[in-house]
Length: 154
Image 1 (cartoon, rainbow, N blue to C red):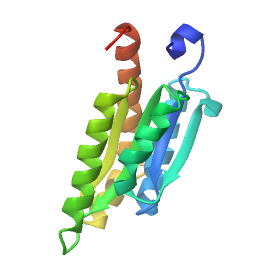
Image 2: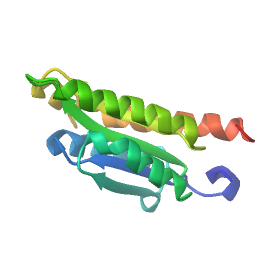
Image 3: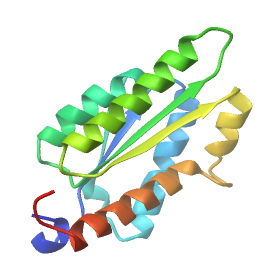
Image 4: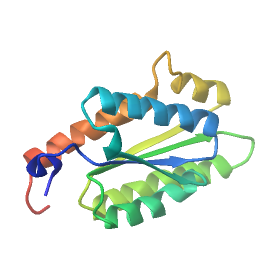
């Protein structure tokens, strides 16, 4: 049953990686702000934290399975370094969240920044500029609308 069918505000899980928290915290803030502006009640927005972007897929699968949320926004930030670590973590987060999104019955928004340096990451999380967290929230709202207008079995 969808939020609109229940006559309620949608229940949103913000799944936030703690690694690079100077960026992910601002993305979380941007997402919360946009959701509230769209009428999502503050008590229907829950933040859940994981160590890093690598952990987002497994946590998203578990959280979706609870049935407590209508949408999950997975927020992380992977900054390229001098080793292949970036490729492994960013690839796992992307592939893993993609696989999970195809197996669960709620939208999962990919909100993981993958940047070449910290300056790019900070610019994309700027609370007074183009905060990508707000864009992630907008995508979540759009996907909720799509799911609600095309209900039934997938």
